Image 1 (cartoon, rainbow, N blue to C red):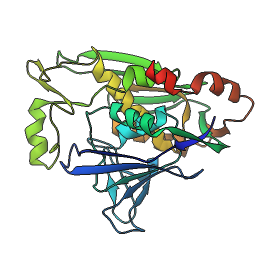
Image 2: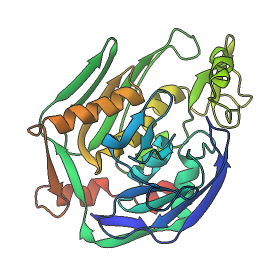
Image 3: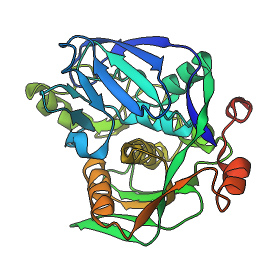
Length: 307
């Protein structure tokens, strides 16, 4: 696989989940080896760029937020990052006039649609992957995340909530054959009605509504349309993990497993990974040992997404 960017620029509008700000988001093609660069168009040029990298993560309490040394921040990047990973977008300028990516419907589906409309442009340089060589684990109480060697990118997870609308759920999938588009992309973020008042008193969830999140009350899901999948909660957790792990700076070849994991644990596993240079290596997509596999399994065509 070669590096990819978008064929054309595309603009989206929406509201910030936590800030409540109206946001204009522009996805703009970028040259080879640029990576994914967030740009705050409402801030001073030269101090407004934030590369989408694990070591720029500054907060993981309710979303993944990145920052630069000048104090510029961009929050709630994970759903967009997951869509970029699923479509194999390596290089992109991501321009926003506010400190938060718009929440859209609470899933990655609107970003997937935007990428399809913009088109994907193949660039004349092989993609670089991060290959997991040995297991890496981080634990924090009942939370665990592990990365283990694998020939493709695969994700599994487990959650266990006391609320009967969620309970114990598990799921596993891999980023092949358009699986993300079919199985995860439309799965929405979720929260509990009892927490909304507290969040808003603390300046958060100002843009949240039943239009962009699953809200769970004492008696069950409050959204009139219900769930999109019976296990939408764990599927969304894996969507988040895919977006968070793309902050590695390249696609990871290996298996992710998270138990009660969230943004904090996803960032901790990247810190642990890069602190252990024996646990990973860079490989090029044109190397003999991986190029046949990627050409047959990892490519995601628009035909498979639309099937």
